[in-house]
Length: 188
Ligand SMILES: Nc1nc2c(ncn2[C@@H]2O[C@H](COP(=O)(O)OP(=O)(O)O)[C@@H](OP(=O)(O)OP(=O)(O)O)[C@H]2O)c(=O)[nH]1
Image (cartoon, rainbow, N blue to C red):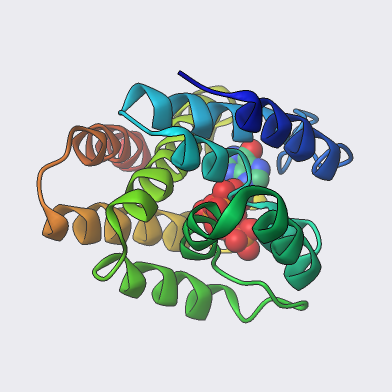
């Protein structure tokens, strides 16, 4: 069962990301955080993993080192280590896109099981959003992303391959299915 800590993390995540929206749409960013926490729980997350899912973009997007310190203080080392493992940049400005994404893919091979679960839940939620938006918007979807069509398709295929080398987990297989559907649409 989830305790009061989860409720506190939910409130904190909503406050942190209150003014942030998803790229190219007016959807409140918290929809992504709720989606990632929901997917992580459905694939067996414990409370620390579910809290980290809610806070996985907090350091990257909302305050860097100061926010990391607050998470450490309020939710402890286990949650902070998972958030660290899901963060592709905590500096402003962020390093170049390709360099960040390559580093993220590289670190999958050494990531803890908790980081793998939350990271895969994050990528699964984003890939489902891409598939849904691609069906609605067509090729103009890719203008949202720094990597464009080629870079974004490369990134998701590289993620699927990197998770696949870890082993066969249900969440990796679901991500692979969604990414294949995006690739099929892209080559149609
Ligand atoms: N699919 C999708 N992604 C969106 C949307 N709005 C914001 N994003 C975020 O955009 C990122 C991908 O955009 P890019 O331009 O390629 O990369 P960047 O933000 O990291 O520079 C994803 O980050 P990420 O690093 O892959 O994951 P995350 O850890 O930041 O969540 C995702 O979270 C949206 O409407 N759909």
